[in-house]
Image (cartoon, rainbow, N blue to C red; front, side, top):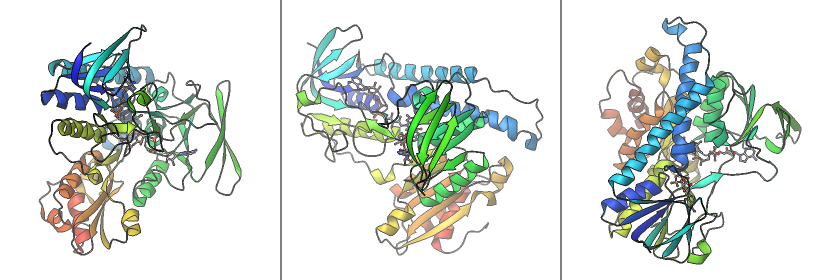
Length: 467
Ligand code: FAD
Ligand code: NAD
């Protein structure tokens, strides 16, 4: 029987990063992945393919709508969806091959098959051909991720009633895509098809889109996406979805309790993701789940069985690739006897619409509910020279600081390249910067980042310079 110091089950951004860090720390490390390709949800059917299609569709949208304004005259552009999907697959292929290279480079043994516990120290790998192999491992890290959440009254046929996975592989541009769920997946993939010419209708249960983010972001994103032609039905609960040939019918109740019916040719169900523990044999190892089916861990990501840890989407917390990776690193270092720490308040969240939405720290709603006295600074993107030069004038940066100490408690932004701009806020908050600190730092001109300085200045009470 092969023996390892650490075995990781699942090769997503949580699992593969944990395996690399374990190997770097000198552990004999194995990783088990049920699919033949490494990288998990993020690299295969999540972050990377969705961003490839977002980029392609954005180029198309700009060619169709914005080039003329820049003085570039082209014939009417046509979208070649098959080529976009093929390019996306090439990007995924290059990225997943990179993970295989990293496994080889770090001398990590890769097992292809489903990993399931036989006991707290033995894991059986069941390969595709049904053959099995059992390995012995001193420590195990569960990194099995998540799957799309299903609604009990919806049968996903994966052709016209689909999840994000199928939405990344469509053979035609929908005429009318109905999106159930105005969260991150719904808005990102809704944007892809809206830009390619689909009619897109979002049906959201809550009274706002991206409901967990700061209310100001949700309001502005709603406004901007409506301007792009997306339609929103908020406070609307879906009750049934039916397919009839090439048509789909979604029946829902609006906030007045009245029935509303939407007809289209595709329905994307994007109502969240659920932890994936099927087939893991957790009961044989004695590992407990929490009330929401996630692997239960303590603050060191250790399960109730001391040599078994769990990370990423399968445990509590934000379902984000970078959160999973931080946890992978932390667990490897904990096993090595080090004392790492993750500040979960400083895990940024991004929505890759255009303009992009990004945030870190607490929202205005959270801080008010906690009774924290705050002051808020805002700066609109349209007041920046850089924004006018590129034509990306939508959005703003909002800096929330402590009323007394001036420490930055949350930064919420929507605008061009917000996904990259948020890194400044993370660094600032990690070092517990005050709004005044940021307002006094030189920001290159002309850049979108100047909005961060100006919003911080506004938060100090001195008022922004350019607005
Ligand atoms: P996963 O990536 O889900 O990997 C788990 C792996 O475990 C899978 O490969 C699975 O096959 C394997 N596995 C499961 N059970 C077993 C078993 N018993 N034996 C062997 N292998 C097993 N996050 C971001 O931060 N940024 C984004 O831009 C972003 N975009 C996204 C877009 C979409 C469309 C989706 C669906 C998700 C997106 N996410 C994004 C979320 C991100 O993909 C997840 O948070 C991340 O993949 C979680 O990593 P993980 O390692 O915990 O699990
Ligand atoms: P989400 O939690 O972001 O959004 C789901 C939305 O569906 C919510 O707004 C919710 O109110 C709504 N909803 C739930 N039940 C509903 C119903 N019956 N009818 C109508 N609306 C309903 O989940 P998601 O968009 O499916 O994404 C899943 C996970 O993947 C998220 O946790 C997210 O963090 C991650 N992800 C991240 C990124 C990124 O970082 N850019 C991109 C995609 C996915």
